[in-house]
Image 1 (cartoon, one colour):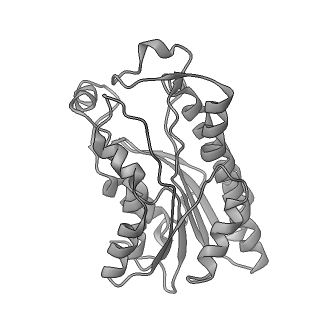
Image 2: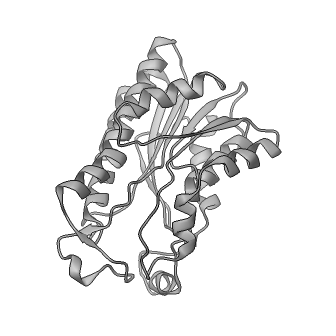
Length: 271
């Protein structure tokens, strides 16, 4: 295990109530980091192609993540926040700094996950239902996956500069590809915007000791993976694994370590 450097670091992890976010919070805590677990409990509509496990996971709070971290002697707090609210960025940093200390690791993991399409009637590759692209689907997706990360990065940078800090890590998560994200078009577009913000941060904040990278996870079983999805991965020439959230969290934690000091400005594709 690559430990974080001496001295306690403080991380904000969004979407930390389940899946990759929860696994990342636990992994960072295991390496000596105090963690603010940001989440929003969501009540998704029933979709026959989406396991109930996934809906239950998204509806949970993050108290169970905090309890698991504290049981191992770590430090964590949970806060529910609606990232569509532009004022949430400053509030999250305030909520972390009070009990934990200045934030020097930011993991932009949360997603609005609106499934919209230009041809919604046919559903997606895995049989999940789709809605049409509308102003509402665009706004929800972009506010959570593009605007919120941009404002969180801006708040991170502002406070980093104000306290004269010389070490920091920003890690985002993306999805989609060179041909967009058919079936989840607003999601793919919003994630592309987040990538651009993060790459700009890598350049602008490099002289301040901050690295910024984006992880493109493989198909990751956060509760939504069905036999149909596993068959798709098995027959794909570009998807190699159905990963566990902990597998992705290990890479994120590595990027947050001193060992990754020279890794910045990259979109790292995991397969």
